[in-house]
Picture (cartoon, rainbow, N blue to C red):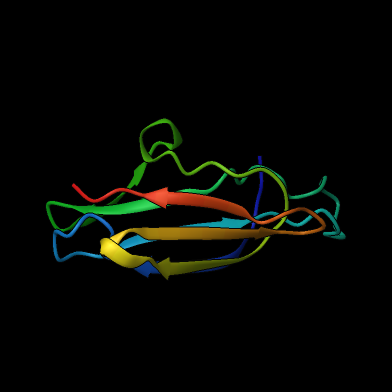
Length: 100
């Protein structure tokens, strides 16, 4: 399974002083000997004991399908953070991100 990353954003979502890294990608028009690059379902990295580790989708809640073109953070009132994932030819996907 292959994929690509087309957008990477980092922010301290859980308030621990360390950045979490959000990645999205896929490329359906990749011209190669392989099939389209579609294995990326959204990736979150969290720094644990000084090293970044992948947070499974079922735990992070960040799961997207399709060709991600851009990821943006929006700070709401009361400290709420939202992540918007823009997917090619589809409506944006909104994610409410929770602090600890």
